[in-house]
Image (cartoon, rainbow, N blue to C red; front, side, top):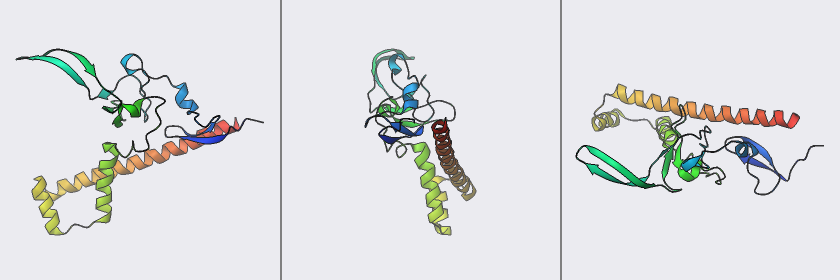
Length: 184
C-alpha cells in the first residue's frame, strides 16, 4: 500500500500533492531547477521561466551629454517589482513572488495588473449600465469615440474570459495529472 503522507498540500502551479511533513514543499516545484547567477533561486510562478526577468532596480550611473556612460552598484530586493518576459506569460509581482521556496503569496494574482485591470472593466460592464450622458462624458474625457471605448471594453472582457479559462484548464490538468499519478 502506498504511503498517504500526513496531509494534502496545494500548489498554485501544480495543484494538490501529498505532504510528508507540515511544511512539505510541492515536489514538482522542488524538481524544477531555478535560475542561476544573480537570478539564483528564481522561477516564474506562472510559466516556470528561469532564464530572465524584468526587475526594477536602483543603480548608480554616470550620465554624459550622449547618454549613460557606465553604471555599477545595481541592487534590488524582495520587494522590488518583477515581471516575467516569457512569451504569453507577463506575470507581475515582487521579486519575492518569483523566489523558489518562498511561501506562495496568496495576493499575487490580486496585484497582477494583467489580471485585475481586465477583470475590473469586465465586471463594471457586467454590473452597470451607462446613460447616454455618461457615455458622452467618458468619450469626452478619453478623447475617443464610443465605438473605440466599446472595443476597449470588449478586449478587456475577452482578456478576462481567457484568464478564467486558462485558470480552469490548468486546474483541470493538475487534477488529472495528480489522479493519474495516484493510479500509477
